[in-house]
Length: 299
Image 1 (cartoon, rainbow, N blue to C red):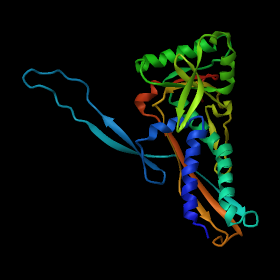
Image 2: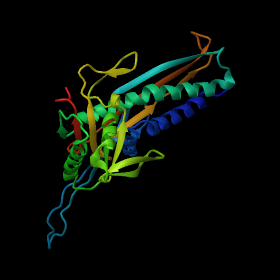
Image 3: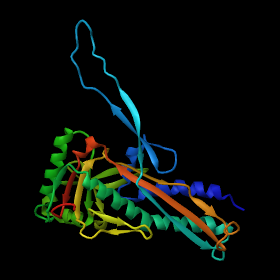
Image 4: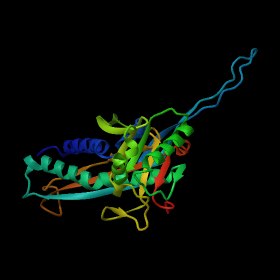
């Protein structure tokens, strides 16, 4: 009998990698490199507190200032899961690993990644400190409106740091067709996990096209069957933020594989899949996040 624990470890690692590389918001997980995760739904995020400059005294020298480096324990609010059952007559022990990997990968691609993207963008939008509501994108104004908000963000951060524009696909296509962009859009690369993506840039800022259905203000995350767009949800045109602002975490936790011999309920393989995920935005970063939406508000 194959070692199902080894299967589980491989699946867990590969499924986490697929989220980072396959989602349009995977770049947000780069900011979680210092996060401590020991399993379950809790993480520890580092917090650094420093004092500002003080006068130098010719007699007493430097004014002391303590550095506070601590960890804040946060709870991931999204605790999601699903059980998959593969009949023993459909696969044997030799082909189980391939079948299970295909099922889990397809499930993440079609169900999990869209849900995680949608959750992150809706939460990021609500954290925005710079907002523009009731804007209906048009070819004649979309570029100037976008640059106006990029400038507003750079005014807040002092012009330093890498910015990212996450844009609804319908607006992105309009931007690419706009007569305004002839000399403004460049080609560039954008790092996401182990991938270097070819993207479009404007004013040196990466533009990431996102399926429009994942750029809504509100979603319903059903307790039994996936998620859906909430009634009255607003279409988000784009979100602009410093690349280091959102701290996103997604963890495939404790993949369980039950063999047909162990299964008391069916002559089948059972795969228990559990995913914890969330996104956190430090309060001091929210003022540098810009939102443009089609609705009058996000409510």
